[in-house]
Length: 201
Ligand SMILES: Nc1nc2c(c(=O)[nH]1)N[C@H]1C(S)=C(S)[C@@H](COP(=O)(O)O)O[C@H]1N2
Ligand SMILES: [Mo]
Image (cartoon, rainbow, N blue to C red):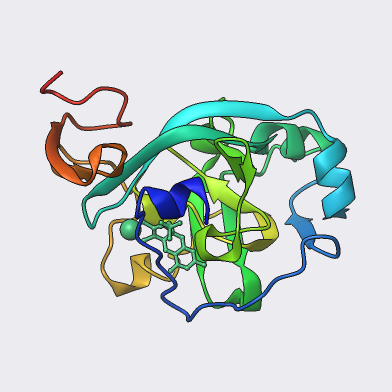
């Protein structure tokens, strides 16, 4: 069991569940417009400064879960590879490279945008995108690609898995009601944008 399981957070794998993934041998390739393209191994990522972002993953399917997401800032990764001036979008590729999604550089550089490997101090399991997933609390959850194997620094936008199937490219969170998984799935109203406060508080 895990905290995310305890909270009954839905598990989405549009491309099919990946099964067991090995954390110790996990690698993430950083490619595209940068001076030093490279591969980060799990030990290398785990040795980088850890950021804890208190934030919520909020799905267009209308659930939201908040907690302390731990990982490496995407901005730290971009710094480490010497991201070039050409970069305008950052594309995340999941295990098997069927699921992808891209976010604008300014969102990638924000403080809570992570390559996350923890939730509430527990390492992420496969169901929830372990060993390492994107965490982008500013946009709908489909931008938070799970079990990432590749990050591509791009000079243009390419629609990803869900964007090609009709979800918006900008993934702006729209006001309305979502199920708050921290409160047993109770429907609660949110304003637009990153979910920091519910409106009924
Ligand atoms: N590889 C992959 N990543 C993914 C998805 C997916 O289907 N496959 N679903 C996305 C969507 S729509 C949401 S809302 C979140 C859900 O995260 P969870 O399954 O950990 O709750 O993951 C995102 N990342
Ligand atoms: Mo979603």
